[in-house]
Length: 435
Image (tube, rainbow, N blue to C red):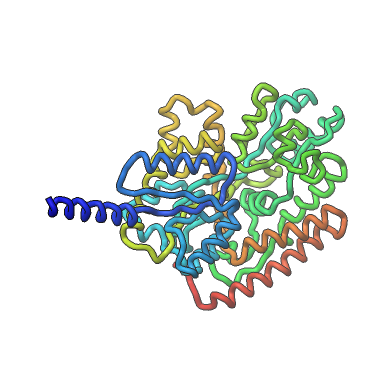
């Protein structure tokens, strides 16, 4: 009897140790409907098997998640998995805090990931550092109901057509024809990529840390000046010009008729429009005379952090395998508007019989936009301290929108300050190369 009790106690202790060893943490930076979808995915993973258990912890924003993860790594109290956003890619690759996902999962068919989602997180030699997760790209949204009221019967596809439609909307009494927040991702990164323009030399940094910013000399500068001029004409509004003080909320409420926004904002817009307005979503607009290139992947990917034992790594691998499944990607897309990241998912959506329903409205157009012809300048952005650069760009261009300086002066200042960040980063990681 005593032996059985001891054996049972030993078994319980072994089970507890095993459960403890297999418990892993995943930190993410989303809120709202995306956080709800992530938590649902984590619960589904835990319900689907008993070998591993994942605890998913929201950090409130990508920036906060990034800062906390690096601090936790230094304190040796970091999670196994961390979701990082696009702008932090190079900082994390060179941080020595993560192990490339392709090394941990060598048998995964990484070529099944759509090139537009994969390229951003690869080294120049093609090694994938992170598994693309909540992938978005820039799309063009219109309130078809309001456009038709103003006599615009065809959805605009070019900037010239947008401005023509905006003039009709204004003439009909519409106070906010087109709205933007002037965010770096929208007005510089995605604009430059699809128009085939470099943001920085050395192919946006992929070819070395000695890159320098060039956006102030490209057609992007003309576009930003156009936004200033169109705002003065009452055709374009900034977030601060709207009743809501938020450009997405202003569009969703019907206050503004057109916007460029992430595919990840689709679900909220569709829900807000239900029973009130008809929503259209398409590729982001081009200027006439420019060949369309790919838009960049936005959102974030999942990295495996160093310093964890075999059981934790096995749990991480199992979770990454789980979220890669077509049915999981489909559920995530329909819940959030983020686009699938592997080629087999579009086949699964087609077979589902729901390919043309609103729940998958962003899937084909988002993937199509990212799969347009690419050049070495549209692969992605591989620039150090890029999170800080985005803030610099916003500071300078917002001054121009406010009339405090010309837009060209704003871009020249942003280039100068951005180059200073690049030189600091280059000194920090002197001699380090990513292959």
